[in-house]
Image 1 (cartoon, rainbow, N blue to C red):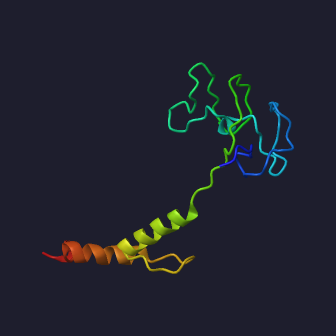
Image 2 (image 1 turned 90 degrees about the vertical axis):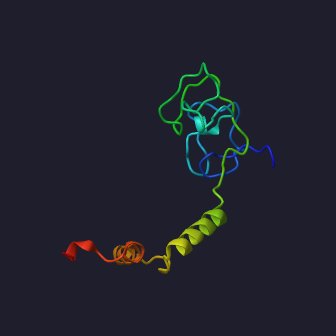
Length: 129
């Protein structure tokens, strides 16, 4: 893994951007603001205030420019989701629940769900007396 500074939003290289990042610095590729929590080494989405610096003011929007004095740009801040893992998990769920509709088509979930419930619990008792 290299220590190249890249945009947190699109992953474009920020070689052309002067350091230290000014508050209004923007990504040359997508024009996203760069002096943001998401591009900081202290950003931690797993804590309630999303910052590992306890003395920092916590902005409402971690994707907008802020005045944080603790800001340090984080190399490789752009993290792509692994689409292959997502696709594999979705396929397993579809197989488990019997969803065989082609991609782009909406399956008829109401009838399928009623049928599965009927198989599990027997016929609907509303019509019995």
